[in-house]
Image 1 (cartoon, rainbow, N blue to C red):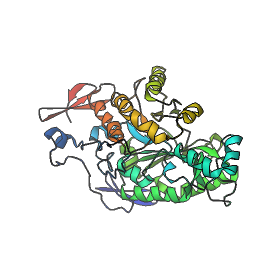
Image 2 (image 1 turned 90 degrees about the vertical axis):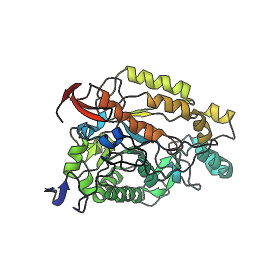
Image 3 (image 1 turned 45 degrees about the vertical axis):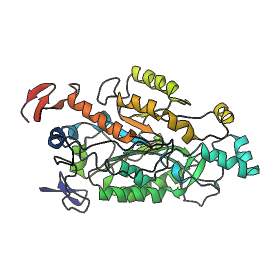
Image 4 (image 1 turned 180 degrees about the horizontal axis):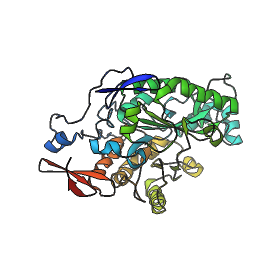
Length: 393
């Protein structure tokens, strides 16, 4: 195993850890219990979690997909990230919304006023329609999520440098602590890559933006992949990089080479899957963006729906729609084609097989001639092909 020095840090490639010690090739070319011969030869692990029953969200601390990127078929290690299928969580941090938090400054003045005058009535309702996740950030990463939707705000009543996350109300978690938690997880999983989308900034001054960027640099250091051509997993591994950080503030991005531009997010703003899916299909028909992008399968309430369903919540609205949404997800295909998908983000990670379904879409690249290479496994015989033509491995 050759040693390389990246930014003053010595690493082993292609299998390395941040400390320079060799890492085990998890999930690749090994048999498990009832794995088929094809699974054993290609290194594809069983994917997909247990579906929840009884109409409730189960906190599935599933580790099947914890190291799914390093377990991908080696042919996919040279596919750019924007041509892979990557699971994401929408409004990642809403599992820790603060029950005593004031209403976000971006909400209507009427709602903010009600939050001050009738907090015991207003806040519980707002919370029911604001929580989109129940797994914490480490549990989401363990479940296989690799795109995190981080909405960052500075509370007017907060201390000078304490930044929180926000979705109608503010979180108990601080941004700096959460980024540190993500960094510590990455150190334990040196061949996994995350895409962090810092977006929907609220109450952020230029000084606070610069403070946040300094925190990002300090916490992730050499893990950050500088802005440029979108890399492959092999390229990231060889450089010891694990973080693509997009920042939805152009003026800040222009000053810092570690930051990537905001990632387009297809948001349908619909209350049920039957209306959301046509929107997503319409977006696909217009052609995918050139780089990373997100297809959001998250549903969104509106005032009329909330008033008509006073005892409901976003969770109760979402769960009955999950089978329909999952069926659409399983029909998608990653790759460079005009109607291909890339990141797919959803709510209530762990409630069904969403993460495994999105990861499993990468198998379609192995049967698709639209990517430079593919692998074909049949009757226990592995055959390597280039552009659909059999070739030597």
